Length: 494
Image 1 (cartoon, rainbow, N blue to C red):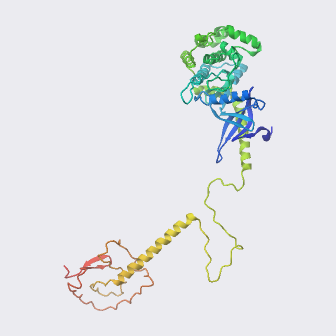
Image 2 (cartoon, rainbow, N blue to C red):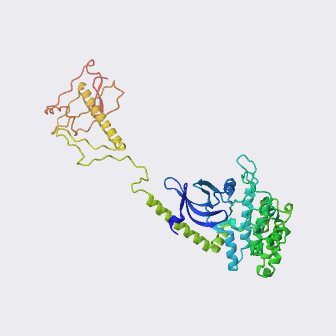
Image 3 (cartoon, rainbow, N blue to C red):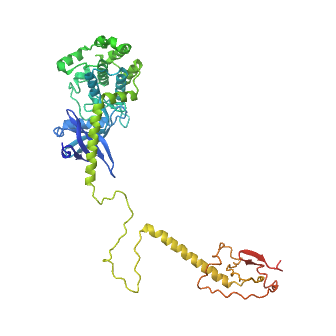
């Protein structure tokens, strides 16, 4: 089939090929499409188009979503969303990468193999744990919802590739919050797994426990308890009369082959006797009670052992599902790439710099310099800061030089003349009365002074003369002078 025939868009979901079909709906692999390229694989349960116009079926479908969304347990498949758009009614669930328990049991029967007892016990214990979570579910205000699944069967149990058994399909579930009310005496579910009171239209939580006990009987016996080949009449009669064969009788011919496992089968039969009781009052009161009793009889296999068994028995199913997912994922990516415009910007970028071609630029007058090309705002800030700092530094240097020339140089002792005249020290003595300014180090003597300061010619070499003795009144204020950066105290200014 072509991609156009197998993919439809409903809201933010892209529905691909169907992977299962039931009486009310079909199950599709789907993509949840989000923003910025986000997507996720989900399972979309799509109500049959002919039933989408029936108010009763639509109400049942929406009830399933409302009920399942309230149950939060690792052994129950959660409902993520509900979409009603363009005459489509879709229930979105978490996608479970696994194999239906019905497929695993059928494959074992066809291969002449048996489901290992610890794995059968593990699967049923997990189903009972999920059922107990559903039975005890309350709303946000803590009000019990009295949920009854009414369709517990191997077809509605997915054993994931990680070894977790998960209960799904609350399509015919009963709850206090349901808008759809089943008429008195009406049966809903599968006859082969229905309890006697459920056949009469009065299902309770013990009815789900009965269905789980039937599943356990079939996994241990490796055959159907109420095969459809015998007809509905025979099935109903067997259930109402309680004509259920014992495991010991069914497996008598295999006792020698089972060996040490026979002891566990006898103990499991005791759990089944109470789980399959016709009288509801003699049945297990809660699903967790039956789970605890079954785990005491035989320790359940750990999840990694169940996972290894699922990958071995369900290899063909998992490989086919993986290929289908890869095919749809590849189609999805090609469709997204084709729909994306060539100029589409995925990541936010800096604002573009406007540019003009040479032909578009106006002629520049001879007396004017061409205007520099505009720079992005993020690039202008460092340049402006550097220019400002340079301007302040030049102004400060000029100010210090001007102040230095206005201060009368302090008398200092002459030094003997050298063969080559020493470069003049341009260090300026700062007044002591200005403690606010920080010390400023001017450029080295080899650097050129500012162009506005004229350098006097170097003095001629003359014989050293004794330094004049300054008077205390005129030359001892201040009583020191600087030679470079060194402070020298004047003589006679003690």
